[in-house]
Image (cartoon, rainbow, N blue to C red; front, side, top):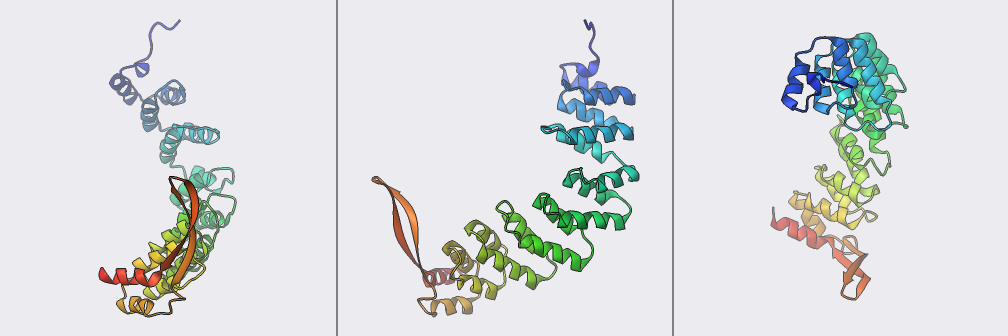
Length: 280
């Protein structure tokens, strides 16, 4: 039976935090961090006082190995930020079993830039890791040609969960003309959601016109391209254009008091161009 609890286990938050912040003994601090019954704020305060690199590394590795980390990811992140050993950071960066995010964070902090660049390149090329991590790694590549190659590959990755990644990859390209071309390709070959994201980043007026004229694209994307246009002469060209080129009929599901039914909807994109001109 425990008669007296240490102050850091107090139910009084201020008292518990004050106790932890006054600690210097690394063994005791490690005990606080590892205590599964301790509140998150108490554990984070203990991490802030930890200096023992081996304890910090053990914390990060043990939490990263958990299937369900919950809020403990914050403990691991705080512990990782305190690791300053170059040997340890290099080990994290090159450890294929570590998470992609952890490897990128480690590579960003190692002083051996050549090794860091190798890590970024490996991660950017790895189809098995999450596309967001691949994008972060690609952006960190310093070689302009290689960075562009990696970003173009990501912009062309037809992953249902990577719509925003594709657009961000295209927008991150150094070559503005290539970026606009990649965005147009995304807008005209993806679904409506991906297309709308791409249109929101398109600024080249002639590229937008090409999207408007792309008959295989979702009608919503073509309409969005018109409403992104600001060039009066090009909008006028749409208005004066061939009705067959700018007309579109599609089927949409509607619902009334009798239930759901399909309705054929006709759209004249020239009308959209006329409305757009009234706002310019």
